[in-house]
Image 1 (cartoon, one colour):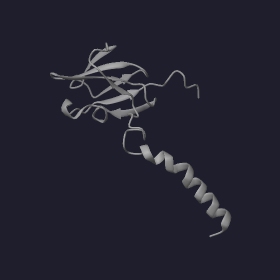
Image 2 (tube, rainbow, N blue to C red):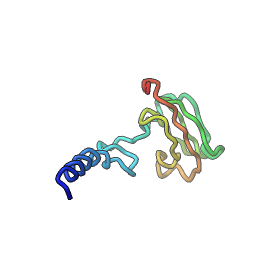
Image 3 (spheres, rainbow, N blue to C red):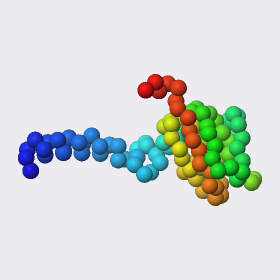
Image 4 (cartoon, helix red, strand yellow):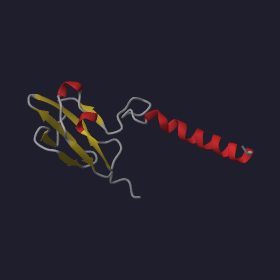
Length: 113
């Protein structure tokens, strides 16, 4: 292996390694979710969604949504990474029960590119 190729390979590895900390886990290295944050029930939700009724929903970036599944519910603010699609099961607590709902998260209006 030529020296220049080895240097480039090592440089690439050093750049990519910090990004691998959140790959596949659904959270940043500090433990925060990639998709937003769970809120206390005392925070008013902007809308309520019955998770058992639909296959997918669209949410605006920064929106607070209360998800219901029978008598179970939880609130989530979508203020993590924007412009992506996730499964509700990726953010729902284990006690929420099974759902097959997909969530499309809108773009953060602060992102101009």
